[in-house]
Length: 485
Image (cartoon, rainbow, N blue to C red; front, side, top):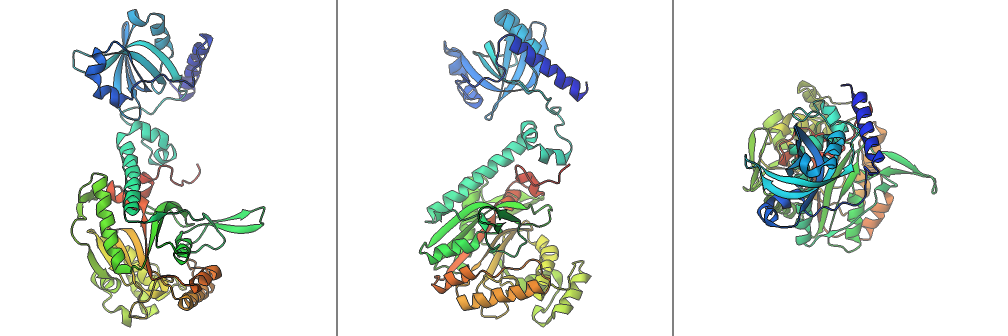
């Protein structure tokens, strides 16, 4: 039967209910037990004189002469219900005429076990809660078009327990992260999503316009600069968990809007922050029930052992065979990049080219949790310099080839910060698209004094990819950004 015929048939059934004076979309629900609770208390309920009332979506329907079995599912589980003609009388006929897979119903009755031992409720009453007008995808195949799964996540969730489990784990992970930082004495704060200057990361922003103020604003690319203003203001430990937005390409590990947590601690350096990151990752895995490790892409990743630490230049040497980064010129590195299949654009700096080589050539080899340290200065304008003038006190945590954490000792020298941002402006004028804009107000805040501090960020979406053995970031975002049909 064609879709429109099915929909028209269901609209007719809607009419039957209304002709009977029945509201097919009532407000009140008399549910006494969630399904999981009803299953847990099944024996006690079967002995009780009171009827149990459950509610949920019909996911299966089987008619046998004067009886009908339905599978009912709510957010906690599924249970079979039994409709019998000689018990329900006219209500049975109405059920046969109007009920479809996808409808939400309330069922009242006594629990019993079938001959096969299946827990079931024998209905003494039923009530339509929401009549569905469109058929669900066929149960055993669900949504076969991957793009449709992402566009119609609500159907994906209805049809797949694995998908529901994945997003439940995401929620538990976010809770575990908050619990960890709260227990470590960090204060959760909220900073603006609309920024007059798109600062805090090397990324292209989305722009909007505020009519009343007649000013252009940017969706934030990172909360960093506002969180560091709070360090200036006297808060020693702060974190923010929320959305940021970057006007960049979409691929298996990037979505234009994403969730992250950023946290900052006064009087810490990058080494103390690395210890904190290790503790954080172990705490998360333990709280969500994953123990000390996960399986990702067929490999077991262990978070119990101390994380490996490798310098950025050593990674290039080990996996891209760039034996002496310091002796490479910008142009010689660009030539080497092209040999490795990495596009090196004319306006890109030496550090930017090295970073692209690292991402595309080296990072896939980093399976076990690994801290990559001492990144090039020209791609790290907000981090403190190391003892080498072309390196900064920065690190990234890589696991399963994914960047999970980015962190550094925060630059708190206002004059050095001013010079670095001016250099970024020159790079922008030279054609580099992803640069950090000059933020005069932030530099002014630093001039009032910011304590030594370290800051870090976890990309929640990529972390969930790792924890759920998922290869596409769209699989872990409920409603990812999609191209219109």
